[in-house]
Length: 265
Image 1 (cartoon, rainbow, N blue to C red):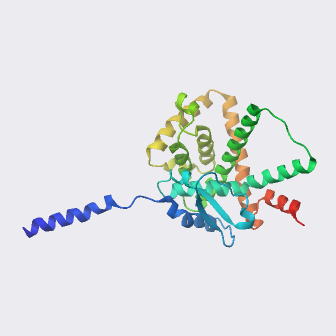
Image 2 (image 1 turned 60 degrees about the horizontal axis):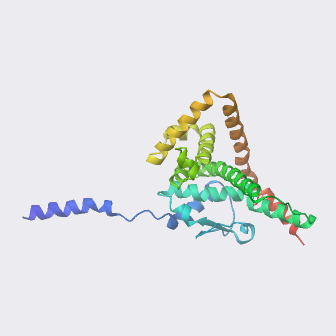
Image 3 (image 1 turned 60 degrees about the vertical axis):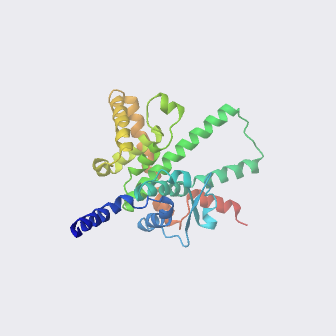
């Protein structure tokens, strides 16, 4: 009888790990975010990482030193690599100076007394293009930040493809955020080929590879597609170079510096 009880006890103990608490990405934001900064030699005093719901706004980072992270995007992160992908993307936007660039352009427009008149359709298309372009730039920077901090950059692709796809993604049978994910894959394959060779063990990444392989097959038969992909990677490499300049400026992008000069009294 004692042997039976002992066997049951051992079985229960062995089963405990399967009931372990689920991964909570929000609880890991400060630790992972700090790791990304420290391992990249970005020395900014009193930086605070905050999880927020709704739209993320980091336009006041140079003054408040707060990095806001989207709770909805974090909901797709299932481990520290994927949490790092979400945070590194936001840091990428800061390093590229996207918010400060918008402030500079708005200030110049106001100062000149000009207002660009466009149709709603043209305006929406322009905003969509700008958003996609800036996200790709941030993803390239994020890849470097992640590798330097010991995280797997392919997690960027996983987080993107876990999300809900657009109508066009669905009818074309491609992963969610396929254009961004492919751009990230091209960049990582060019700059960190060993990371692509190592792979990433999850269904989302395996499904993405099916799509990526089909894109690469199309490029083999089209010099124009291959040339565009190579050109995009070259542009992405220039974005990644902004990390060093960001460090030299003490945690400020070129656009931060320009806006600071414009608003200095």
